Image (tube, rainbow, N blue to C red; front, top):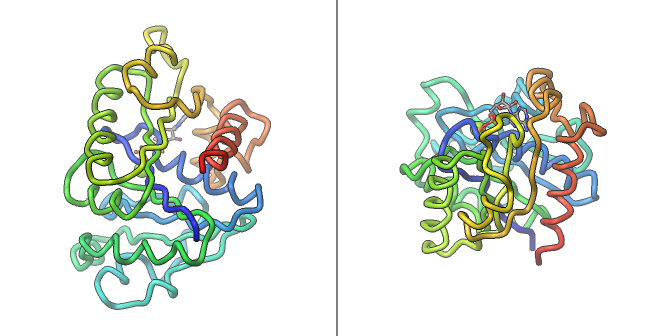
Length: 237
Ligand code: ADP
Ligand code: MG
């Protein structure tokens, strides 16, 4: 059986989608069968970040009772990686029932080694349903105090809800002189720091190109950090 890992944070823009895409591709490169799911139902962009823009059936159709999950799974240009995209138009958004996310996503465990769930930020209903579709959670934060404390809150709520908190990713490190250093961040968060991803221009360029950085510029510092994150996660049984 595979692992269901939610990617979560307290605030938007911390790098959840970037982490979901790069982690999925990195695991695929390592030979694991991966399904990346866009569970950010109102601000979906995982498939765009991964270069898929022509999906007809989306997770919204499944959550609206109009399609089977198997019709929403797409192969990608990345080895071993499939994607379940989300719709971006409001018509689809209002018909989809977010409460059905866990029952929709959990059975994928039987088909893939890893199911990586890109979630919305915060603790509102949409975010909770997305995050609770996983059995484990990887938190993503930036090196700022309000971002760390908000992300910590999400981790505490999810732990209470029964998810295994794997640890956190400190993303966009080095953007400012006031960044909280990794050792201090780990002390504040009280969970393992699994990777420090530097602020790295190719990560942003890659987003614009629709080819995540581990594929776009595999030798860049950001790409290397995402590859190490994937290796670390496979070592956590
Ligand atoms: P979220 O899904 O948490 O809202 P995204 O993954 O969409 O955040 O990232 C927000 C923006 O930050 C994107 O434009 C992305 O390219 C950029 N970004 C994320 N991580 C990095 C990084 N390590 N270095 C540079 N830019 C980054
Ligand atoms: Mg996102």
